[in-house]
Amino acid sequence: MKIIEYNEKYFDGVCEVVRKSVEKTYSKYYTKEVVDFVLAHHSKENMREQLPKEITLLLSENGKIVGTASLCNNYLLRFFILYEYQNKGFGKILLQELESKLDRNKFKQITLSSSLGAFEFYKKYGYEILEFKKIPLPNDNIMYYFEMIKYL
Image 1: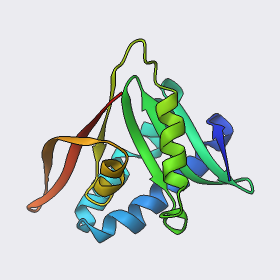
Image 2: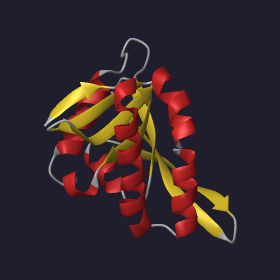
Image 3: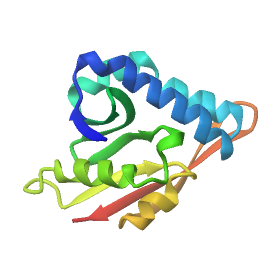
């Protein structure tokens, strides 16, 4: 397992990790409408525009992308590990490596939005709840999530 920095040649691999992770993990906590909303939020078009503006690290095993996480200023986003690689310590490694990329001369904290399923993971590594939030969606669906912060 190794950590590599994102470049355009990994774009499809990142998209696949995001899609598979959302479909597999989010469906345990959210309705189909919420899963579809998250997939649309992380569409290829959005990622193609956003990834070049972010610090993005990838977790790779034998040339296959199995995890991804990005940092935009002091906001951690798009943190996904393929389901079959979760709960093996790889997320911790990726999180710590990405946190080390934060410009600590500019920022004294890191923030993120956590899904219901990822909340305990972030809490375990020092993140605290700022706010419990919700996004109303069509047909009375609601996406609940946590805004979290870690002081460095």
